[in-house]
Amino acid sequence: MNEGASSMSETENQAPPGPEVVQTAYEFRTTRDLGAVRRFFLWFGLIQQLAMMAAGLWPAAWLVLHFRSRASTPGHWVLLILGAVLVFNYGYLVALLIVRLVVPRPKEGFYPVAPGKRLPGQAALYVLNLLLVKARYEPPWAATFSSVLANSFPLRPLFTRLFGPRSRSMTMGDTVYLIDPFMVEIGRNAVLGFHCVIIGHVFDNRGLLVRKIRIGDRAVVGGETTIMAGVQVGHHAVVRARSLVPPETVIGPYEYWAGVPAKKIKDLSPDGESAAPGSEARRAPKREGP
Image (tube, rainbow, N blue to C red; front, side):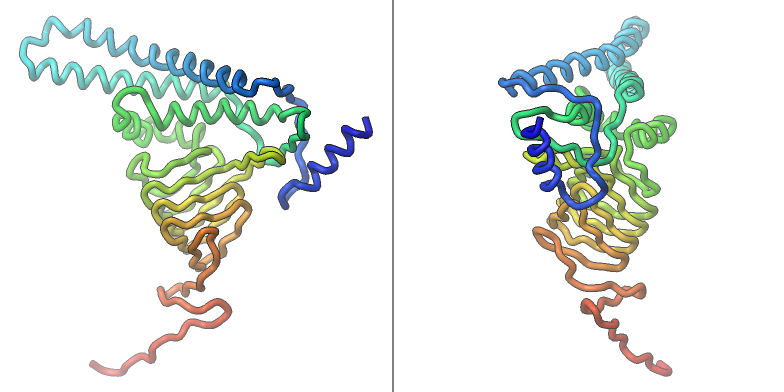
């Protein structure tokens, strides 16, 4: 008993800064063969994917069978097949929303792992959520259809509420890699560059850290930048392309950050001019007349 308590205290000491360590009653013992655990989740994800595909294929097959007698030209068949693809993706997304309602989301917190003891149940729950995210962003047939449908009315409000991200910004489709979209909040008129990676969790030998990511109004995140768990990007802040923002980093409003790991480079003034850290922006004198 004392040995277990000492192991837990050591793990808590290794926890990253932030709110108190969150305990969970849902725990499962690790098996000696971790490969078996991985295979279980892979098979579970495959069965889940097949079920959602069946939900999309059934109405698509009905459409083809019902209208095939009227398809007498290649043009008719092209329209019929495109309609079947559209119906399949719509049915697939509706089934995905239903599964999303059944699987709960992981809660914010740090869930420690004692070496050789138990993994938190939130880790298993997180894997299930990642399988849903993979099914959302990597559909089995015509991903462009799924992207447009999920980002258009009437499915967009449902996916924003159930999957995330909570965003008030316009989107051009699935151009950003959201590993944990349900942990992301994006303000109004924010700009995210192509192939940004936003991750709401960190898992290492200490345990699982789950934190929300908040990106403020009119913030700009450059392309191929990685934003990690717990990061807060203030309004009108800028993160240069191909930067890595570590967990729990707070970027203030009107700040310019860059690098791997990202560091503050300078301040940005509201009128678009830049200032060195700790100094005021130098403004050119206004000229009178022409």
